[in-house]
Amino acid sequence: MDTNDRYLTLNDGNRMPRIGYGVFRMTDPDVCENAVAEAIRAGYRLIDTAAAYGNERAVGAAVRGSGVARSEIFVTTKLWITDTSYDGARKGVERSLERLDMDYVDLLLIHQPYNDYYGAWRALGELQDEGLVRSIGVDNFTPDRMADFLFFNDRKPAVDMVECNAFYQREVDRRYLHEHGIAMQAWSPLAAGHAELLGNDLLSHIAAAHGKSVPQVVLRWLMQRGIVPVVKSANPDRMRQNLAVFDFTLSDDEMAAIATLDTGHTCFSPRDTGEAVHAFLEQAMDYDV
Ligand SMILES: NC(=O)c1ccc[n+]([C@@H]2O[C@H](COP(=O)([O-])OP(=O)(O)OC[C@H]3O[C@@H](n4cnc5c(N)ncnc54)[C@H](OP(=O)(O)O)[C@@H]3O)[C@@H](O)[C@H]2O)c1
Image (cartoon, rainbow, N blue to C red; front, side, top):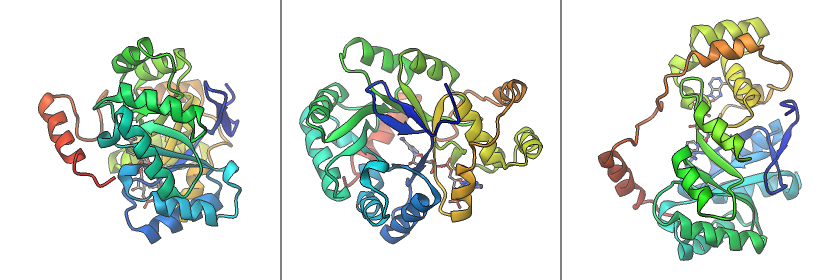
């Protein structure tokens, strides 16, 4: 694997950029459109949205207005829980394409492993054959769920997108996914800007040794593990900074030192009990997608 390559090849033969730009929580359409336009100007070629983010229209407008060919920009969107079924998937994808005002998306992910994701997967396979979605994948699948999914489906997900950062490293997940040829994307790679991560002493020390920032070290550390970070910044300077991660290499010792920061726990609300999942699903059913 050459981590300085700007693209990696997915298990379906499609190419995906090694770092992406995400728009979660950017609900104001003008803010989102301007941010995506700026991100594309900065050089991002992977834009990550979702039906549930409520900003597909703004993303589509920014991509169209960017002056960069559609074929050069890798657009990901995601199917929400309420559409995660055989019938729902087709309708959900059609609504996403209408909002994006695009003929296809590059990557369609099942956003959460709830509801009838087996039915949705069959529908996504058909949509892939029809060319409406180029690659298909899943999101927030843990290795046990992925093992079940791989065992009982013919079509393999190209991608699994999971929370991954220096405090929640997911090495077991990474190994399992890579053994099965599935690309791993990291969401919230900076733990959504968590002050403890950005101010961490070890990361600051490594960053200073390379003349880089802590976010750059974390993004580079993910890339050297073969993981594709999807990072958000509303600030043009930080957008550019986060992309400037192809010109330095962390040593084996530095990689090993960062490995000691793993807590093994999510940086966000855990969904590790029935009650927590129930509460999440209650909210999820109200999303307007
Ligand atoms: N699939 C899923 O279930 C899922 C879940 C969550 C997120 N995601 C995806 O992952 C993307 C990224 O995750 P995220 O938005 O939660 O968080 P993130 O990328 O980990 O962190 C974003 C935060 O870090 C700050 N930041 C970014 N670059 C920085 C830098 N160089 N220096 C200092 N601060 C910096 C940003 O502030 P400024 O904007 O002020 O720079 C923002 O507050 C999302 O936008 C979304 O596309 C997916």
